[in-house]
Length: 235
Image (tube, rainbow, N blue to C red; front, side):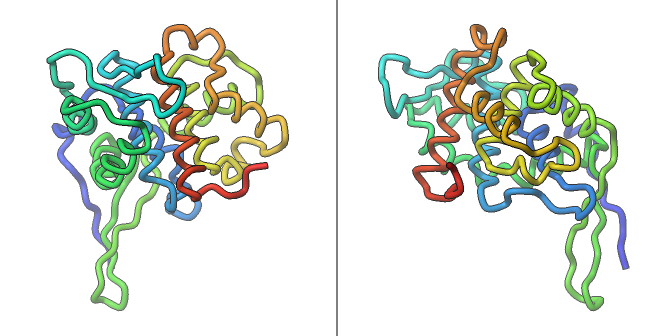
């Protein structure tokens, strides 16, 4: 037994968030699962801070070589309630990237999924196992995931010079060690591995100059995953 579950579209802002885009990319349509669940909160937290960085809502202390603290800028709270709590957290005092990811990342998965359902990019069904235990099953809804995959594939395989959002997505996927999951959509080979590492480490081509803070955050996500010991297969 199953029933469709929808969320009012009013809860979804006009522009997609980077958090939602990362989660949508990680969603695997064939299985209905999300790649990299074991590192997901790091990746979503990184996407939230990167989203704020791309709009100038946070900054990184560039005077320090390591453990560069991130802080909120300005007095205007972001309108998007998915990332606004992250800005609130950073406004209290500057914090290093690893601390931020651990604090904000675990709270992002469910609201991001609900946002994707509200936008029609995913469909949610409530199913009951043995007629007793409810669970939610997701299937692909709209076309945005295909568009995102095409952009990331062009950057990783075709060598295209991406915009800052696409570069951030490629870097976050590489940092999460999930790119092999995408082999049918993004051919997995040594060249893609190397290109992904370049995005992960801040080599964003033409988008680099305008996105210094975002590049630092993505690189910080990669470092945090290594420090936490959740990524162990790096050559």
